[in-house]
Image 1 (cartoon, helix red, strand yellow):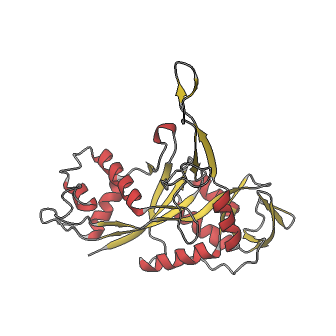
Image 2 (image 1 turned 90 degrees about the vertical axis):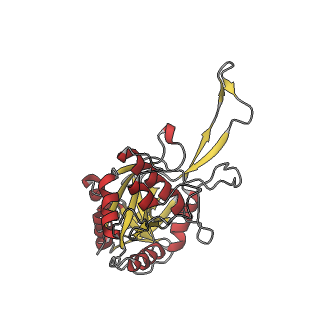
Length: 294
């Protein structure tokens, strides 16, 4: 017997789900879908993050803990013994923070993202996203009286958008699902903007953070040879989601159904995890929330 939910991820600091291959001047780019160029966190990486967080909170040896082995599978070298009960999809982009002339910043999304979210929700019987009509380029939907808007215009980065007030139901839905933090909910209701698919793709492709990192020769206090590199980050406030499906236990000595195992996972995990590179410099701190949309 399986059970399923959705995991929402809210980046609180810059997030580097690494791609591993240098592209142009960026030595360490983030992972992206090949066909959309939208950022993702691979499901395998996310599963490893949750496994480590679960291990840390239980304080048990991960190679012998029945809960860890049942949920996440046995360690390398013993994978033939049985499968883990937990399945995680790649974490997909839901909303991306973009600098705004008014209101500081906007969370932007697009109909293609929302259509895909609705399709993914159907997999887990999670309802659907409030409908948003298609948009032409340089047009945006947002909540009425949003602080992002001056007159009937919205300025994001260097681009001007004509605004239509029709995104209130969507903003309310996303705010209620993504976070339990009340200030974040309040801001989401007023600062979410829906853009044309192409406008959204432009921002997620070009408006990430690129940070210069350097290693010093501590004796000379100068840069070591080849120690300068450029690393790409998803900016703080980025929102992503992953589908979570939990089967019943495949272990003979630890029997539990999918619902029991999923409840165990949610009861143990803290609401914050670290994802991606840069852990020791404060990167990748994320709030997580399991919800069952309807």
